[in-house]
Picture 1 (spheres, rainbow, N blue to C red):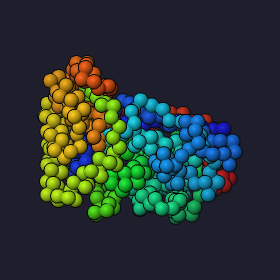
Picture 2 (spheres, rainbow, N blue to C red):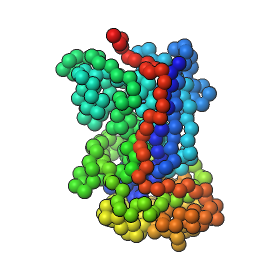
Picture 3 (tube, rainbow, N blue to C red):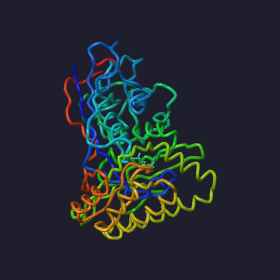
Picture 4 (cartoon, rainbow, N blue to C red):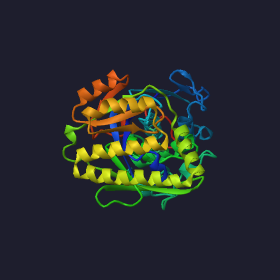
Length: 396
Ligand code: PMV
């Protein structure tokens, strides 16, 4: 019986949550804390899927169920799996635990199944793939929740010419794309690609409504929502000089607040009063200023933009007294502080040069803290044995 283990970091958001769902710019940072996913093939294909030793319930784990539909098709003979999830990212707290789980699971499944190529295999060149998901192809199929999807591609040389089975076939864009697709499904059709891309690529990820000249362009994502199509251009930013001296202290209120509810709350407020879109646009302006400061390595201004962003989030109704309490406690020793993620509970972050002091202040106010630096690794396959766990089609 073979197995694969993969991991991905959580993330926190410096600027722009909620507004990014409406196409405004935002920046997220991968944190040191990670989710680990390991998959093991069961001996009999008729076995039930297991998650952490219990029978897998697709309703409780919609992300994993949606990935199974896209990468591990039972109708094509894929064997049952036993999945284990561990890590130090608290769930439903605004730290992207579900996105980290999704992209790590995606990497584990892709490693477990390997990849077919049409031409000489070049794992980093989607044009050579005979199967898979990439921004270089039509991405509609990744976002289609209605059927089981094989994502086979016919290249010049026909289907299934070469087969590779090792972690080199894992593609960060594929994991980020599928991660976004399954997040969107779990959030009722409204989700930006911010979480999935940050957990997949690591480092610092910038989303914008234009292609930015001073950041490394990754790709463009589009998603059809109830009220129209959204497009985001994603970039990665090299941590600026001086980022070794600043820390992110994360304070957890311990209150679980599902992202989908907060996103729906903002959507309802905007529907009731379309004028409130001005608040979303103001968050976009603050984010843009904060991004410029970040690129310049001016962390004092980054902190100020974060605190201004918090005022807007409070006005939008996604903060709560417990978050405000931790933000107040962190403020005297930090450059700026705000909620991170969907809000309504979950976590806040403080940007600080005095992590110990800030962390103690948050703990005294009743929060549990984690400390992270900038520049953390993205998705990684940590180990594999007995590959492939499954291959679709005959290997000669
Ligand atoms: O709470 P999280 O970690 O899932 O972050 C949500 C961020 C939002 O902007 C509120 C939603 C989104 O899809 O970007």
